[in-house]
Image (cartoon, rainbow over all chains, first blue to last red):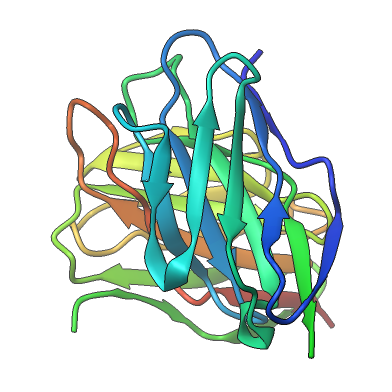
Amino acid sequence: AQSVAQPEDQVNVAEGNPLTVKCTYSVSGNPYLFWYVQYPNRGLQFLLKYITGDNLVKGSYGFEAEFNKSQTSFHLKKPSALVSDSALYFCAVRDQTSNTGKLIFGQGTTLQVKP
Amino acid sequence: DGGITQSPKYLFRKEGQNVTLSCEQNLNHDAMYWYRQDPGQGLRLIYYSQIVNDFQKGDIAEGYSVSREKKESFPLTVTSAQKNPTAFYLCASSPRDRSSNQPQHFGDGTRLSIL
């Protein structure tokens, strides 16, 4: 079965420190992977995606993600966290069983950046 | 600016009542989606539509209905059969492309509560 796991419910980092939000996936075939961010009472905003090519993907607001096929991971990273990065982060993978744009989401990780 | 508009932002449902959530997009996207978000559970797909006059059930369609009479509109009705409707509902859209690697764009959600 296809799935996405975000093993940490919450990640706490100090402002200025690097951050990592973890994501692992399980799909058959080549994965299409996405990261989204959600601020309170708002919709999801697209950050970045991995389709093919370079394993290090750069996205919006200084975020990047590293695709690791052997570990089936797609961790979100940022070299220097900002207080304004505090939000809920979702990893998602495209449903490979249908020829549609359906996404399978992880449960989300709350990032708390403290001043 | 192109985007997705969901209304109302807050909605209250009485016992035995059907309520309809509106979703309108001006992105010229063919595909549209409805998700339900509960705390700690990520996003779960209710219904999706790849093209006008066609839609499919997602993972949790029971107690919900949709229509897709126009490309830009995908309203969701929460029926009285849905016994636990309290949640945050998100509408999304994406281009319909064969490679299915385009990100979904999200509205800002409707928060539904029981009176």
